[in-house]
Amino acid sequence: RRFCSRRATTDGLLFRQMFESESSTYTYLLADAETKDAVLIDPVLETIDRDLKLINELGLNLTVAVNTHCHADHITSTGLMKKRVVGLKSAISKFSGASADIHLSEGDKISFGKHYLTVRDTPGHTDGCMTLVSNDQRMAFTGDALLIRGCGRTDFQQGCPKRLYESVHQKIFTLPEHCLIYPAHDYTGRMVSTVGEERMFNPRLTKSLEEFVKIMNNLNLPKPAKIDISVPANLVCGLHEV
Amino acid sequence: RRFCSRRATTDGLLFRQMFESESSTYTYLLADAETKDAVLIDPVLETIDRDLKLINELGLNLTVAVNTHCHADHITSTGLMKKRVVGLKSAISKFSGASADIHLSEGDKISFGKHYLTVRDTPGHTDGCMTLVSNDQRMAFTGDALLIRGCGRTDFQQGCPKRLYESVHQKIFTLPEHCLIYPAHDYTGRMVSTVGEERMFNPRLTKSLEEFVKIMNNLNLPKPAKIDISVPANLVCGLHEV
Ligand SMILES: [Fe+2]
Ligand SMILES: [Fe+2]
Image (cartoon, rainbow over all chains, first blue to last red):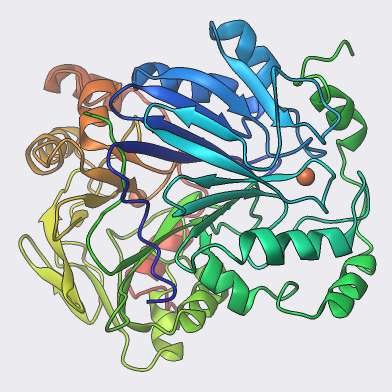
């Protein structure tokens, strides 16, 4: 039963995964089905209308919009969303260097109704990367730290392969093997994995630290198309004066 | 709790939704986590390697590959998959006009381990459209009969708006309101809905039959780019001699 991917059976948890196709980003909506309090993870500027329409239809009270890190490939909608949702607070890691209403670090909780997400610092892709773990440890939102059969690059934005390797092994691979992995991106239509699967099949993170560092230092990827726009924008919740 | 979207809590059900970006098609993998017997719904030719790799990694025994209907927008991989997976059987509606190992109709079951999917005939987009409902009625794979806040078109392939309206109202909207709707497509990054949501917010199917028919007869959509290749190919499980 290592790879069983049943969704969180937590009572009264509303969950939605959504995709933004230009940057291949996943946005996650979680809510308490009773109280209607909701959290949005990694919302993208291009899909703000879709996301707010669904939130309204479902009658949710969006209280926190959180970024797993300061993204380089798309602009977050958290800043604009704050202008459109009364009382909404933005959140990001205190190690991100970005402004937000809430600065998070290891062990902090984001509560919504009777549910919460716990912050695990997982730096390496950037200094301020977090993994958000559901209270029942059945779901982990890993941002760009751990992708499905991959991981975020480490060649810009304070990237450090050794730190990333340690983050994944110490903070993500130590979760229960059935814990579902929900990444910030996938480029081939996969939507979810599990800790057990990634421990066994991740082509990079199953390697030794030395091999991993060598792989990551030799990817020779082009610079992300939008990095010079996205990073400055995301340092201020997407609300830049360009 | 109308819109609670908890995934099937059925014990030991492995479930994966995957996306093919060229035709915006969702492929679904379901398996019994104990016996490893698996069913694949609407697999696409372009993503056959991705799908088979995952099935192999998970150690699954793929027994049935089923199409919800004879697709016009992409070529199915079921024929090619049969050549690569020993014992695999293809399945489709007996009203589709397509060849396959198994021809299905109302009430038929597709079993995998202790789980099964039940066929509901939902014609209207095509004559041979089926909705596949999980044994616990927590998930319905609606093909192109019901899409998220939409529905399949009715202007080719035996399309009939009145039949589609009746199919959705009689066979899908009668499912429990928390039943998750997994469609064959979405074009804006949404992955799942519920019966309750669509009953309330579907902009077409909340209308009267008369209004629905008028809407569907005035969409003025272009012909699908691949219809002249896809339909003949899909009538023979994607294995055409073009
Ligand atoms: Fe990133
Ligand atoms: Fe179709």
